[in-house]
Image 1 (cartoon, rainbow, N blue to C red):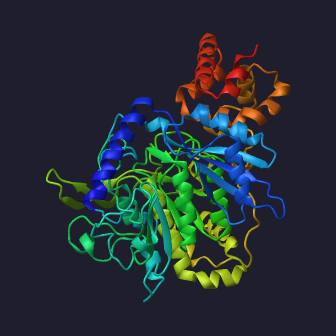
Image 2 (cartoon, rainbow, N blue to C red; image 1 turned 180 degrees about the vertical axis):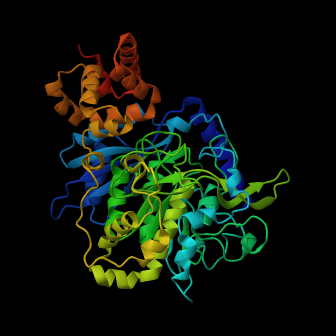
Length: 560
């Protein structure tokens, strides 16, 4: 174990130095959809693509069993965004390829240089109103009353929750071998079977983040919680957790790691997936895996995000239930992301959760402290989802609605219709209200599942965006869509009528570049306001895009 942790530390120091210095996204894999003719060997077809593009040494990984979706995996983490997009355009030009897109590992731009505390809202002072109210978050979500509905049955018993995060630790409030399914987990950061969090506390790291969010989902049976001091009560204390180490830090977002983790969780029977990770650009492959998970009947929930106005991905996808954060006074947490993509809000500010630190002597110190962020809000909501399935029974729910794929829609409808709506609540920005577990469980099940439909027109556009423009609209809340189109046309130097066809070619890369460069988004905001500064900011934005884009985008931007 010590040898493995030392190897991790050496690799992590090198990676942290490289990414911190450049802050540039690095290609992890190329997602490719193939048009496989009847009788054609899909693997042979994929191999021929790598030969044609001279990708010697790149690994081919099938994503779906039908041979349609593949990942072509880079042998190194030194391939930057411009080269990645050039490869994508080369793949799209191949006759057998119906679509290709990149998957990146990147620093979440807004949090790349935190100025206060740890990312995830850790810099906020603890709310004094929660000083000795260790179960306030459960009380505000009406979880304590929901437990009474179970009678003698253990709340959450038998429900598997997939947990893509930084891994697990042997914290007394989390390490019950009967409920922490280590053998069913995996470490996609180091590619081994043990998803242990090594607790490195470097610039990019969030040691113990997975322990904290996992404890909010299901701790509370024994451990530190048996004492009289600060304790943590998990929402679904008898559920089962599948720890999947997806990243070393919630700041360093791995698109491929999340894709692998979600597929892994579904393959290992997860009925709920709780994602306390996200970034401004998720991409095609990430959206596909969310669709697969929901089609398998898994309820997928994700944090709306911290510190930024727009909801991050994957929470912004319609398939995913996006969760914002509230405080003990039933107010939105001031640093919670918000917008029309938020589906529900749950307690997330000053939530008691398990913590673990490595002392100067190397010993592990286990405690229970408070934390802030939508990470804990989604963990609360995911625990409520586990309670709902446990209360009604997975088999009974599937029997009632015919197919597992209907269950996520039933749950989402009930979650929103049974929530609490505090006076003055901003339903346009924070969803219909705050999770109400007891009312959710007591609510009669609908006779039929609601039709498969998207929440609203804007979110539908983001979920199915083929041109990138809707992602830009999502990243610029408050700027009208028509104004965004005008500004993008000006940057690309194309007439308005030609913009749709140009975006078909370059739109997703353009959205990626803006997501990775907050200064570019600010330039668009300035341009939208007009005035003399707008001209200067547009020129600066064009220069930034020209410097960072692929060869094709650079040529487009250089055209007069």
